[in-house]
Length: 338
Image 1 (spheres, helix red, strand yellow):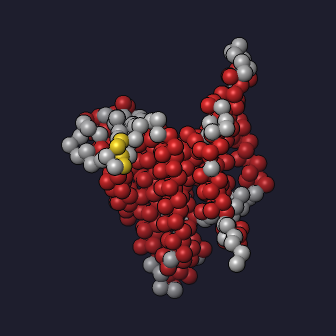
Image 2 (cartoon, rainbow, N blue to C red):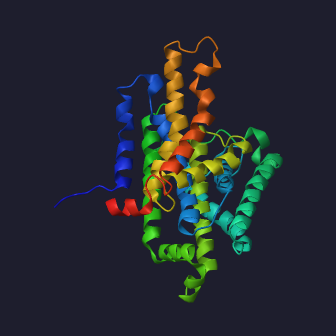
Image 3 (cartoon, helix red, strand yellow):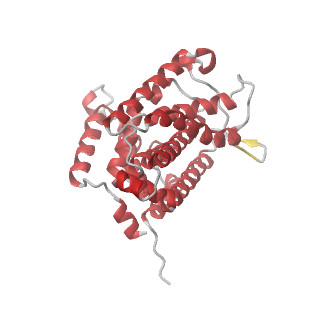
């Protein structure tokens, strides 16, 4: 019997080989840390893909839910608070906390459509940042909450030196989220989302309740985003300052979904690799290699790839959308190769 690997499996298997490749690369060109960042953004974009790709709702505030997850994780685990639940219980709890935040925002606003809903989610993102900055007694303001715990297995706490363990943990959690979203996509609820995206009036006529289905999509996307925020905070051992969850993060997640292919899980993974990897891998490693070779050490700003990142990022985005308007791996290709 012939075995065929779909694009999702291929991308995850290639990612699993990164620590092996690092054994043969010089330290300044190691890829594990950068690919970890790609995986976290892929989880964030999976949440946005549920909302925008499946249900057809434009959300410009997905970073706000990542902030909710990061700060919830910090409050539940940091030693300055009374909870101190530990890594695993707190990480799991960020899912219902994110879903609750999505429900609170979605319940009164999902009657809006198109640009109006986008403006509401954009405003929500700005409000969350201001609240986090001003509630210093709870959120520590601009300092962020730290230190945050690493995972512990068998009573042993991981350290920053356990880079390979961290990598496979993040990759495994990404694979788990992918499997969960894939099951949702194939479920009755997933088919309802696609129906609403294509024609809400016809969906209502077929007995689907659009308000309930859209609210579940919004809550699911928020839960995934909160999970990604908590995972990112744990990797950094800090929530960081509230401005780390600004509009640029939401736009980057949206770019990942669009460039990869709206509604495609494999497209999200590939889009995260292209959009985040361009900065975290290609430009960062090129800069490190040039520094090791003594290139650009005279202070010439034109010789530093980091100084060109916004230009290169913009050009890559324009070319990708122009050449592949349906995305690098749209849903029809993903399912055709699965």
